[in-house]
Amino acid sequence: MSSTLITYENLLEEFKRLLRSNNLKYTTQRELILQIIYNNNGHFTPEDIYNLIKSSFPEVKLGIATVYRTLTLLEDANIVSSISFGAQGKKYEFGLKEHHDHLVCLECGGIEEFFDDTIEKQQEKIAKQFNFKMTDHIMKITGICKNCQNK
Ligand SMILES: [Zn+2]
Ligand SMILES: [Zn+2]
Image (cartoon, rainbow, N blue to C red; front, side, top):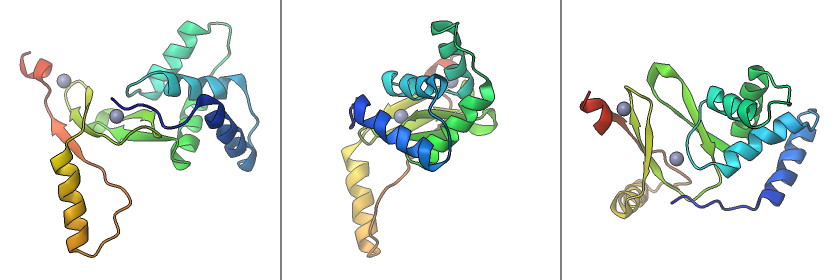
């Protein structure tokens, strides 16, 4: 599920343009953040991303603030999207993938993806009824996952 819709080469070009237009320098650290989120399917907290970079590239100097700032920049440009899981915070995922919706566990913060044709079609139908030109939607089911229910 959720195959990416852009090559890394094109993404990196876009990222460099984005940095330039925000008067930010291209750095290895910033690219590593982009790379991790592009190469790993899933949903990550800024701390997850920070720890992944730290363990894979121990020689790279990186502050958690850079991770936060870069993610915000990428989110504003719609390159990544975030899903909040209650008061615990936000998880980020690559934004340029095939459309999908989420189930979010409020106990452990676990996130699962799903796609349901009926739900998709129903939303289009509702938008049409309201003469509304739908450009996007966010569908999030919150609750307690199977594992947490069994605890
Ligand atoms: Zn859970
Ligand atoms: Zn997702």
